[in-house]
Amino acid sequence: RSWSAFQAASAGRRIVLLTTKASKPYVDFAFEENDILLLGRESEGVPEAVHAALPHRIRIPMKPEARSLNVAVATGIVAAEALRQLGAFA
Image 1 (tube, rainbow, N blue to C red):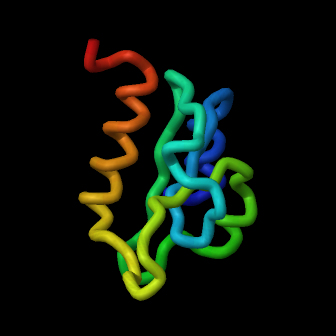
Image 2: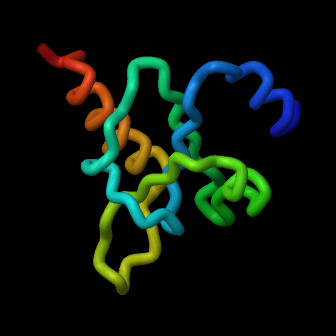
């Protein structure tokens, strides 16, 4: 319903924002079992207030001339890395 409702429902869990504005590549991030991956709209990302509220921000490195990936593809890439780190494929 709202950002504040989502934050309240997610209390005690890390919210990890996947954004083109982040400096940390997703492969250099240590995922934890209860992390929540948050992605914004393909056209706009997340609102600036949401971006500013989240200390855990990661990105998929891309060539400078590339704008961004489809949100479903980006989710799959990062979710697969998180699951790999957590031993879900063993």
